[in-house]
Image 1: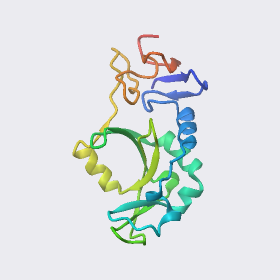
Image 2: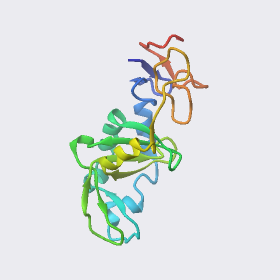
Image 3: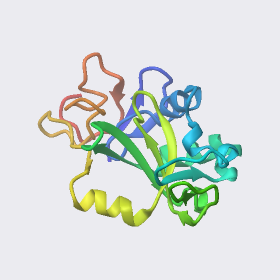
Length: 185
């Protein structure tokens, strides 16, 4: 496991499991003005949409910082080939179902969803809930692609979203090596 230290906040994290500093990522997510859009907001369930949508639970909306803190530590990054954006997916954050689906034209929740998704997680994040089976299908069909390892030889860190290099090898570096199996210290 490669432990690195963030150059911004000095947080240590396992760069072979997470590409970004979890502390800085959480801070960026929580600072996003559109983290819960109207389409996914439980307070706006009465707005009719003409296509299926998901709504995050009231518990997620009221405790977003706690759910996102869990997500940055335990979620998985994917490149979404359909939208050409990076998504961060967490199954059952805090052991809770994070939302429900709403049928086209409906104003009522119709089924629970297990995954909390932070879409466009590295740029303009917003959250929604998704069905874990749908997430599995997206992975199987190649819609969700896992992040690659850093392109540098003998480096097992995950690449930064939008880059082929990890937090240590990107220019300028976003982290410094701690205990790492990376040969370029």
